[in-house]
Image (cartoon, rainbow, N blue to C red; front, side, top):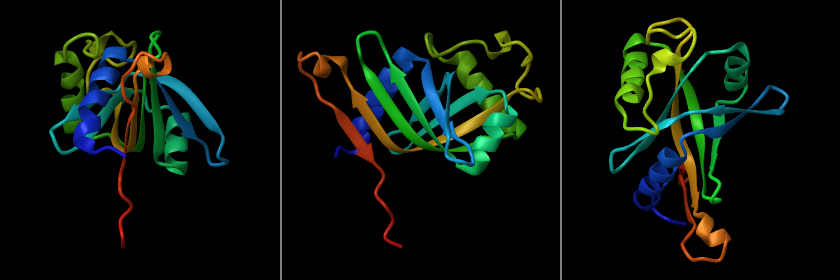
Length: 164
């Protein structure tokens, strides 16, 4: 097992290079559903958090109500993969939605984009724009070079279970 300061920067680099990921949730019966989303990650040297600007659909709301956990799985044609298993929570307050909107709008490409291009959003306070806050409890970074026998290292970090 690796340390978070070792894994988080490698995860952010790969995730921001790949950009789009498959995000899986489960419903109240434990059945999975996947969709493609575009998270942005912030690493401050101690804590990693992710943000997703998305539409708060009834399915997403119901799934996160049933289980507040998601899996974000990135893959590239070179077989680079990275995964973040996360606690997810909705942030509907205007301050957070505006912060995340601006985070995407001012981030460098390819992870940065203008959220106003998404039909129906228009502004960070639109009722069709919501934010998911992601707190990873497990990360894995798996360079395709490892899979192809060309060297490299698989990095894995997992949050320690509390003793209480």
